[in-house]
Structures are given as C-alpha cells and as structure tokens.
Amino acid sequence: MNFQVTVLKILAAYPDGFAVMEDLKRDMAILATSGREWADRTKRLAARVPDLDTFSHGLVERTSGGWRITSEGREVLDFTEAGIAALEPIRAPLVEDATSAIVAPSQVPLPAQPADRAKRRRERRERRREARERARANSS
Image 1 (spheres, rainbow, N blue to C red):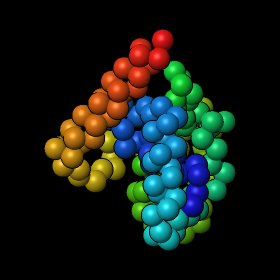
Image 2: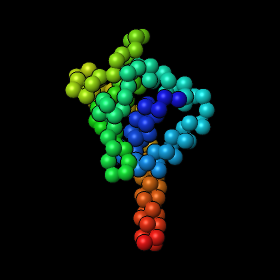
Image 3: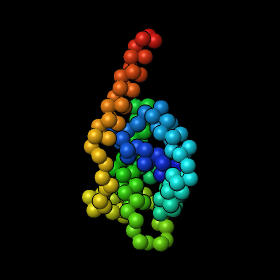
Image 4: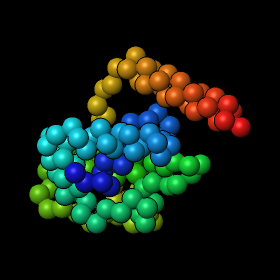
C-alpha cells in the first residue's frame, strides 16, 4: 500500500478535504486491512507520480489537529486516476508548476457518488465530532 496516495484518497473523500488525525488513522487502518486490491491499486496510482511527497509538494497541509488536502493535491490525485495512456511514470510536479503540469479537475470526469451516501457520511462525521466535544466538556 502506498501511504502518500492513500492519504490523498482519504482526504479527498471528505467533503471539505479535512480529517482529524483520529479519522485519518481509522480510515488508513481500514484500507490497510482491506486486502490486496487496495494495495495494488495504490501502487499503480503511485507509479504515475514516483516522486510524490505530499508535504514538500504542498499537496496536504497540517491544520487544527488534522490534515487537509490542497487544490494541488486534488489535481495530482485526479491526474493519477485519469488513466492517461502514457506508459512512462512522470515526476510529481512542484507546487509552483502543479497547475500547469496537471490536467485541470474540470477536464477529468469524476466518478459519480450517490448524494445520500455522502450525506450519511457527513452526518456520521458530525455525530462523532459532537460526541468528542461532549466528552471533552465532561472531562473538564
């Protein structure tokens, strides 16, 4: 399993692209134990950008106890998933040239996701967030 690609995929799955470390670790553990298919998929995606480094390329930023995917991170992820016919792996772009070297997200069709599934995910995340806040308040 490729850690860099997995982090980008997890963060991109959140509507605002932000996940607290607890959620990120939980999602990472689920994917890590989900079988060979996920590991093989992330390796194939990572082969498209062999020099991928989420933090030094500015693809992910650390904020408020969690990580947030940047627009450059979404563009790199979209590029890796685009399935362009190039057989040679490419070098991950630097932050300065990321927008010019990568296909714009508007040009790449995104996979459809049912709205009710995203809504349920948001509601679960909100309930977890509220439970954490209640636990913090009760422990004080």
